[in-house]
Amino acid sequence: MIRLKNTVKKYGIQRALDCSNLHIKVGEFVFLVGASGAGKSTLMRLMYREELPTRGQVFVGGVDVAKMHPSKVPHLRRRMGIVFQDFKLLCDHNVFDNVAFVIRALGMSSREIKKRVRGALKIVGLPDKADALPTQLSGGEQQRVGIARAIVNGPSLLIADEPTGNLDPQTSMEIMDILEQVNKRGTTVIVATHDQIIVDHFKKRVITLEQGRIIKDINAGTYG
Amino acid sequence: MPGLMDREFLGATINTDIRIFFRVIGETIKGIKRSHWMNLVIISTMAAILSIFGCLFRSGLFVSHFVDEVGNAIQVSVYVKPGHDANNLVKKFSEYKNIEKIKIITREEAWKDLKTQMDIPEINNPLPDTIRVKLKDKAEVKDFIKTVKNLNSVEDVQYAEQFADKVMGVGHFINIAAIVIVIALGGLTFSIINNTIHLVIESRKKEIEIMRMMGVSDWYIKAPYIFQGIFYGFCGAFFAVIPLIALNSYIKKFAELFYIGIDANSSQIVVLSVLFMGIAVGALGSIFSVKKYLKV
Picture 1 (spheres, each protein chain N blue to C red):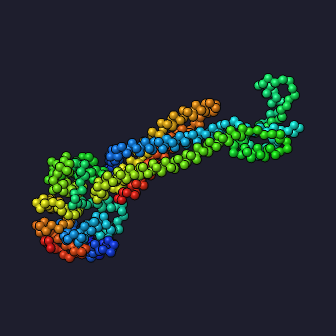
Picture 2 (tube, one colour):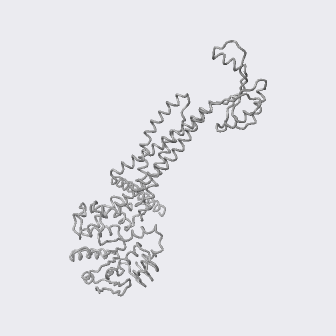
Picture 3 (spheres, helix red, strand yellow):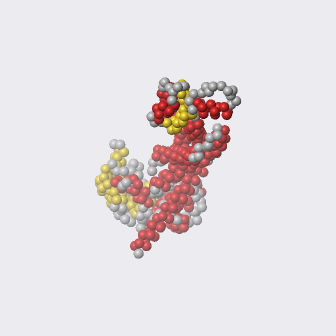
């Protein structure tokens, strides 16, 4: 699914990422852990081509995204779902519209949109909140809406950057349960976090980054 | 079977494109609604600017037409010195390339004509032979008069010079004023549209960011802002046509006063130019803003 070869990303003289080899297979659930500034977000941004590597290659689904023409980037991102720490919901749109507005832009029929949005809201456990505004929801519920929006187009890869960063421990666990459910349906899930309890609880593959380098990569691992 | 599948695929793609187009229109309408009172400011400014442009353009066209018509009516009268043959002069004039029409009016004919118009006592005919000359290009009249005046056989030359010059001068002034005003006000309109679209982009930054991340096409993200600029241009042009209609009826009355016909296609040309100007400035203003502020 994802392969990095001799990938370096620098911001000025600052080396944000230096990864000689990384391979994430289809259907995996991977935690990226490390302190702030360790390179987790940079690695993710390279995957969805928000950043270009200074050197090396980043393959997503067999395609080197670093060499991809900018006009093809939307096509790459349509095969992914992205979950943000700050949810990034539109406060003046209700839950249904927040989940639907991206697939609406992709030209899906109204019937298909309804079917998909209802399906996604059911997966995240919010089937009755379609008409609510984000401001009427709790933090955990808002993040569920964010996940519903990320999975509504049936992506093969889900990238979540600190999805529980703004949530309490119990809600964080619920959110991770949902991401695990999504993974069980066949989607590759990559979660950047520094929440030790979560990482230790789920016993998935853990890639530890420190100063831009992968210092540990353990299957069914724990934090630290 | 593959042919049938291709057709089905093509049909589905076309349906998707049509849906995307209508949703882009929907996004455009949302953008316009969000601009509130700014819509009024932009459309009225554009209407004012386009109507000034349209009125100047229309007047410029009419003045050219007027100069043509009046100029056509004005001919150069060359009076032949007594004892010289008018036919010799006509032969000389024929060498002049710019001559459209030439006619000799003998002193007898002229005298007869004058007597029918005025009550003249029985005296000897004092009139000379006259050659009426009409030139193809009125701009060359001065040169022609200068050349002809130097000929030995010519007594005098007459032409309604001052009147023609004044009308042409007004025409030139209107044309220059139109260009200057269009450049200045066009720049102002461009800047207003550019700033409004910038504000709309700023207000929708979060939405744009999410769309980018979720793989929405550049076209879907950018097109509503460009359509919004075109909408302003179109509305401005629409309202600018109202003073043009009023001006046109005034021009019609003025033309009737001088017994000249109105220039048939000018109104349509001006309306189409105003429409084109409005849409072009609207589209360019928003394209510039999208390029500058919307990094997709």
